[in-house]
Amino acid sequence: MNDIALSTTEPIYSALREVIDPEIGLDIVTLGLVYDVEIHGDSVDVTFSLTTRGCPMERVITDGIVSAVGAEPGVREVVPNLVWDPPWHPGLAKRGSL
Amino acid sequence: MLPTTAGLLTMRASRAAAPVAGFAPSKLVPPWLPGQHFVAALVFYALGAIGLVVAAPDLSHGYFFLPRVIALVHLFTLGWIVTSIFGALCQFLPVAVGSSIRFPRLVHLSFASLTLGVATFVVALLASNRSLLLFGAFSLSLSFTVFAVNLAATLIPVRERSLTWWALAGAAVFLLATPAYGVVLAFDLHDGGLADRFGTIGQHAHIALIGFVLMVVVGVAHRLLPMFLLSHGASERAAWAALALLFGSAALLTVPWGGRSRIAVAGALGSAGVVALLVQVATFFKHRQRKAIDPGMSLAASGVLGLGLAVVLAPFALSRGVADLRLLTTYFVVVLGALTLFVAGHYYKIIPFLVWNHRYGPLLGKRKVPRVSELFSERVAFLDAALLASGLAGLSLGILLESEVLARVAAIVFAAGAWLQVIVIARVALRKVA
Ligand code: HEM
Image (cartoon, rainbow over all chains, first blue to last red; front, side, top):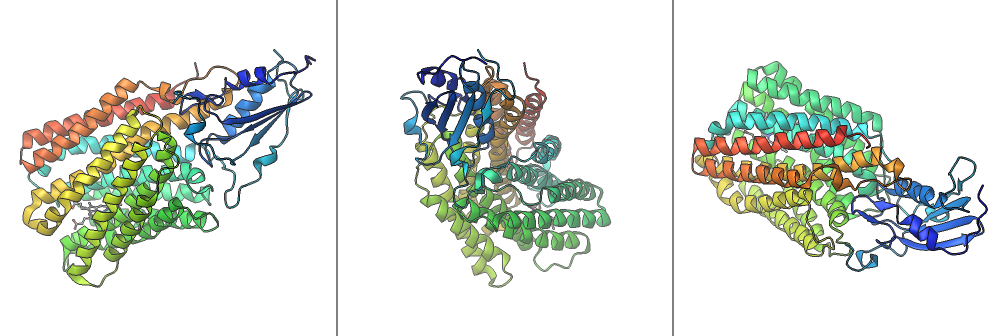
């Protein structure tokens, strides 16, 4: 196990940029789907949403988040936290990205 | 980088993953459940395209009631449109209403009896075989009934009754009414005796088209278009109006009393329902945040525009009926062509997505993966959309002008588009992970 301590969320966000919404073709950070990242020691909570409720990508994106964040040095546990409130809307995406 | 070996990295259950009221977390159906429908539908589509080239001269003369034309019509309506809808519903019920199909095993029965029914019904019409025709009609009726019951069993426990829920519930009702008329017509085709054959055909066709196909289009478009176009938050009033008007129209067509005024009111309601659907689709396109329109969405949009043209033709074609067979044939070619384009457009969205999910989904977050739209060439897909739409437009014109040559050339253009699409989709489906 790698014991590098996690001090900032930046590496987590950059790992999350590897997770794309394959239909839209943009990563979930640019799309504004990642609502929050919290680090508790070697555990990372990722609070995120999806573009549509009941989205068929739910499992794939959740697993993608776990894989991408879990590969970061110092991460031992990933807690994906899917929320529908506030509901996602295109205004949350990075300006000009869509 | 730390390797994510089992035991080293753990994933706790999501705290907020508890189901939202009335909305179960989506369960993925096995890909072969919708997949088998899509394979069969593409085979019927490819065969129908060849049939269209063969039958183009018949169509150009308005011979709409020839058994071989009836066979062709059902290759498209049952083989392409209905088979695709059954497959798409298996896949998208979790997105549409938040619940997977209730009895996945029954889907095998509805699928088997549908494909067997289409094949025997079409062959029987071509071979003029009464027993086979009745067998085909009963097999189709079994399929429709089983699917309608399965759909109803899926919908009933869902607590959040959205517009999509109501549209699919309405579609389930008319899925049961369609074969009732179909079986009566199948008996009549060989034995005769029906007082108003052409009126009954009109009712049968419109109950199926308005009550089932268009109801599904309203429900599914309401869910999928905002997702594909990113037009979240657009007004949904027109979709509710479309739903009520189309339901009213199909209900009036189904009840056996009321005479000509009933049919006239049903026609007016149906036309208004299609206009409301057009307004809703236009609203979604107007509010879209994804400015670029992909081939799938452009085909779906041309299909909806075709439905608008059908509404313009309907009062003339249906009031003159068999007195102007070419106009009647043009009308049906426009309606069925429009729905064909709408369905074809969704194949460019659904199949690449399913393949991506299956092949690349497990790699997400682990390595770079392509986008869904990168699984096929967009340029080829746009060419395909142009072939399909221009072929159908040319065919309609060929019938209106009674030009055998134009009808045949246009049918060849359409068939080239249909075969190209089948090849593109097959290549996507067989694609290996690079
Ligand atoms: C259980 C399923 C069905 C059966 C058994 C059935 C049976 C029939 C029969 C026997 C006819 C010929 C009537 C005649 O010429 O006397 C007919 C005509 C027609 N049906 Fe169906 N049908 C079924 C489903 C559908 C569906 C789902 C649609 C549309 C989505 C449809 C659209 C039409 C149309 C447009 C015609 C007129 C075709 C022509 O005359 O060339 N049918 N149907």
